[in-house]
Image (cartoon, rainbow, N blue to C red):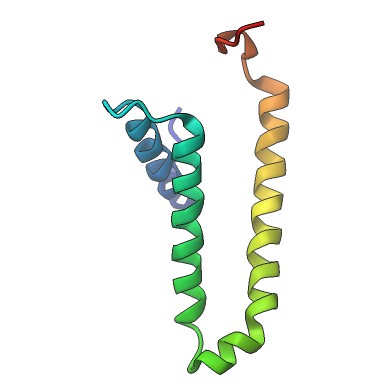
Length: 98
């Protein structure tokens, strides 16, 4: 079943792009794609934050609060998805040398 919630649909579009990058001919690792994903999110969220201020000074004054907000939100989302994977991921599909 496809989740029709717009928030999840937008997130899925980013995941589809990441999966597409993994499947391209450059043979990127999941870690490389993940790092690019995080870098892009940081750049975009910095722009989102900057668009809310009328000066660099005002943004500088709120820099710690901005960082704390995004870190808190990311941590909550990451912990939720880590737990979901702990509970339901099929680890047998991993091709790890043991």
